[in-house]
Structures are given as structure tokens and as C-alpha cells.
Image (cartoon, rainbow, N blue to C red; front, side, top):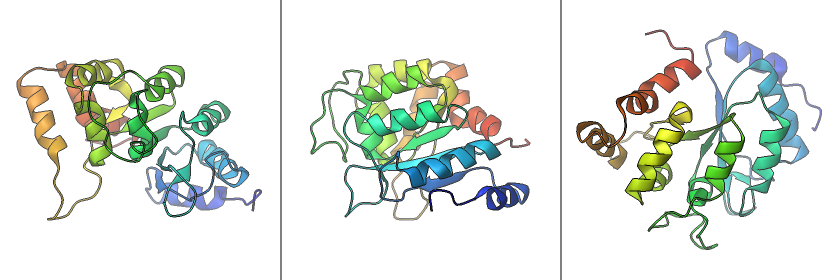
Length: 207
């Protein structure tokens, strides 16, 4: 229901120690009234939310948005105090403006021409980037020089991660960040924020 009250449940989970909501992926439009009702309540409780974007409705999991991410734009504007952690190929592929429809749900290669992801992160301080999974790693590594600049610019809102864990899973982002540190390809400040400090602050973790 568009008026369903999730606040008591969200507050209970928060009281029990939950630090955020997600991965959020109902396969309906990002700005659907059902989503907006939930987003506003998550915002009111003060939890961050990690979302997965799908390129289509049906046959995918993830909230739907068109190329250019206009629905995400509306959500970010409507919920300025809701921290949204962006995840998935359909988001990260739009770090570059020169992608095709076929590439949008994959891992496009080549030089980056700064695209919609850059524009939205510059416009909305509540948009953060979850770099886990191949999509986040691909976005920052496909064009290394661009990736270094991107991480420096948005060092306060990016988060290192490996998505899921399992013996079958390759995690090239781990070695990549070792290289960034050892070869000083990004600043020490940016490296530490992205790899752990941002998460500690966002999730209010005692260390």
C-alpha cells in the first residue's frame, strides 16, 4: 500500500542494531509511489539505503530506471536527508556518457567520458557509491586516470566492498586497492576514507 506504515518496524530493527536498509531491489519504477512511501520513512528513521537498479521491468531484479537515471534524480531530490548507496551495473555503467543500451547492464570498457553518475554525485550530497561487485570495480578501473580523479573528488562518499563472499568469487578490487596504496595512485586520505573510514562514520561503528 502507498500509505503502509513501516516506521515501527524500521525503528525496531534500528534499536536491535541494524545499520542500514538493503540491498533494495523491488522491480518497479524507482519513483513509484510504493517506493517513495518507503524511502521517506527510511529517511525519517535515519538509516541509509543501498539500492540495485534494473534496466527493465520483468526479467530482472532491481528498481527500474531509464538511461540517464531520471527516476533516481527525482528520489534524490525528494528525499535530501536519505543517504542512498548506489550499486549495480545499470548505475555504474553510467559513469560514462558514451554507453549503448546493450552495455548498460554490463561492464563497458574504454575511456570514460564523464556521464550521469558524475553529474548526480556532484548535484546531490546524499548520493553515495558502493563499489562492491564487478560493476563498481569496473567503473573505477576501466579508465585508470579517470578513476583516480573520481575517487579523489568523491572520497567522502565512496565505499570499498566485495559484494558477496564465497570460495567461487574473484575479488580483483582487493588487489587493485593494494596497488593504489603501494604505488600512491590516490592520496592516503582518499584511500583510508574509501577503504574504511567512510563506512565507520556512516554506520556509526565503534573501533
